Image (cartoon, rainbow, N blue to C red; front, top):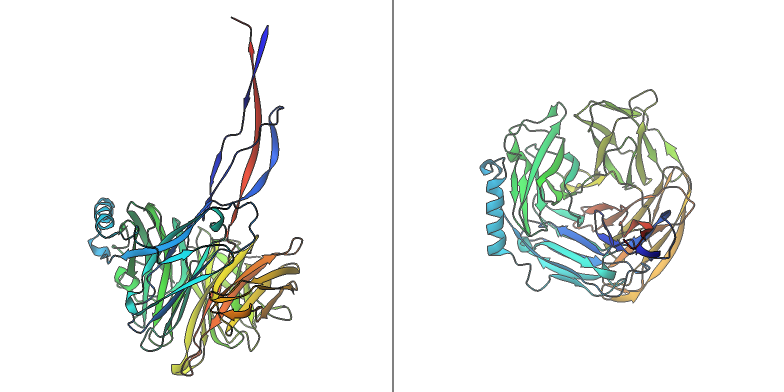
Length: 519
């Protein structure tokens, strides 16, 4: 009797993450099928989308891109490029909800105007060395791009715009986003003093169709034109929120979803009385949230939260400062009705000490999922400037923020639970300089606001990478960039979510023996 053994190797397992892909082939070492702990492997492909930065002719925009150094086993080959995207003006009122018209128009626009094969606008050559490109005026482009190979893990691009005059004056900062199908933006507005545009950017070669829902203090805001919005192939579509409804609401929560395709989404806010900035998407709905990085000199802070589920939410509100966690007097809790937006005025809650807001289920209340963001004001009167801080998840392994300057950057690190240690690395500069690093200890229940390390001999701007050390509690982080002008404390705040530079890949091993009896 002959016995033939066929060995079945675990063939390439393709995993999709929000920011990339990884593949693994497990070796054949013989034996029977066994379960093994998953491996952490670098992602192999990452996408980024940067919306059109401004409509002002006096705007100055800097795009800064980096892949942090030090990702093990990331390979040697790869590229990271951002190319210009078509900005398409679409009237939601002309869109049919089926999406058929959107698809036809999108494919046509993509074929006629797609500049994706042109020379890249931003091109990164190697990990650890950031590059920057500047653009002026309202013609600064929206960008779409992809990184592969060793440049994919942790690839980050920061878009920083300064506008010195007009209703849109201010510093507008945004970490360019990964494509997805679901986004929450608490803190937007449809009132007359605000011009809030949600920018939808499609990275793919086929059209996407998106829906925009608005929720105010009384629930869903009536709108008949927020459904089936076409986003043509490799294009960016700005939609003015006030055109989606006749209701003027000071605070609304925006929910962006796609019925086909995927998009990147962000809200550009212009306040006639308080400057402008980007409102980035909030962390996924949860019953516990951290909003890090409220500046020490904030003159007004407003919490905007939305209960996404079918149950009301009751939140306990706490401020984690340098010395511990406190409950602000008279602002101890917030009740949020299901599918409604609620606000809490916190005034100058930090009182000269940088801090972070921690939201947890109130004792005896409902632990329902919520999304939340802060509108933060610095300065007073006509010298005011606004920024937004969405809730952000803890850094699981690593996070990076680009475009830090020699002066004006503040890094806020919050440990809502146990004490944590983090290593902060400053990259080389875009024009030269030697990397630097420093380790910080963040006591449990506190926020540590520091001036981060600066590269030696810095030329240009640089990136900061934050890596929590094993064994400590969770860490949430945010970076504030201050670029004051003419007595106005212009600033922007970017949270640092985990860069998802690695993915968990199951190890599989199986031998299949077949008995051949000669028949």
